[in-house]
Length: 429
Image (cartoon, rainbow, N blue to C red; front, side, top):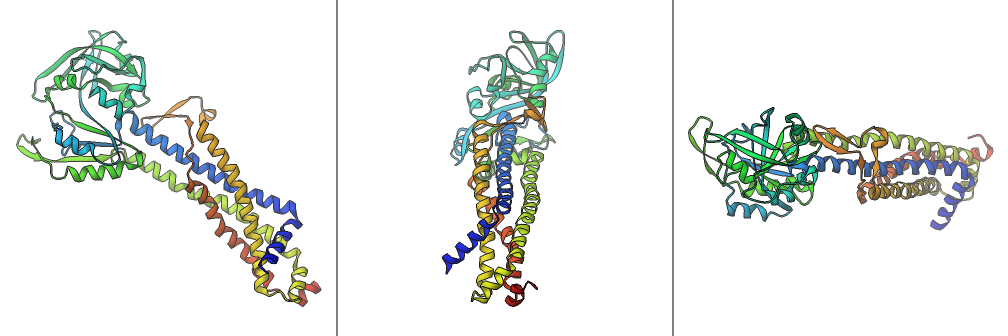
């Protein structure tokens, strides 16, 4: 009997191939569009996170506990070997790099400008950020403790009026109150699309920054790169637990000695506006779902309703010869499910195939703009987006379609099952 019902449902769908094909095609477009959109959103969000964290920020940062309140040069700490070893052993962590950061004056005899001095451990920094990959002219810093070199942001170099090969004077107030100064060789210029780096930052070797700031072996920050950006919160929580009992002797803002701990922040904490934008973008896709499936639902409902109306006399006959209303209800519902699944399969093949293509070769949003890159919240973004295709992103539109299809099939199925056979055969119902 089950095979007979299946054959009957399939035959009924093929009676009007144009209408069935049009409805299946509409479902395929809806499912394919949602799969493609899911893959685009995943890829775009991943690019936003990468653009936010990879250039300099890192996925996690560690500072002295009172550093966030006021980023003063004297709020530094010594990254002791046992502390570094404990941090490096955290699961999901890929690399750690110490940094020094303070503001000073950089320039030549002709022009100078307030500049952010960023001291990096050259070798470790390559494992944490992409600063070395952003060199537009010249080269990256040499991994030498004695290197008096500097790499400048593109806009900063232009504003001061220096180029690769020129000398740059840097002056800064050290943490002990003295005035640190040095003459550095400009060896490279970076262009990152990050406003802070390109317009204000001079990157120097860690030892040079510590010399200028009279910091000894102390640093202001430990930047961490995780194996995957979505592991940032988990890694930050583990590091936070491991540093919970650590305290260092420090001088407070009031000049009195005190003990302070450490603050561990993930990129979600450091750039909350970007995190909120990403979460809002992911949530808003459900509005898109509702609109697309509302259109698909109208197509399914129209097809099944028209099909049921055309076959009322036929339904009356098969009920009169012994088919129960429950079995007739099952036939009409089965037609709806078959039609929806066939359309969904076409949508998976079309939307999934196109998404896989864009995952391999990217999708050029530059066709909608005049630039290959653009800036969002001060972060550079490429207009070439590589999609991310996930099993969840493919199955979710299909699984969301089934309840919609079932709801749309209920009305035609119930009205068909509740027919009075005599009236239907006579054409009075």
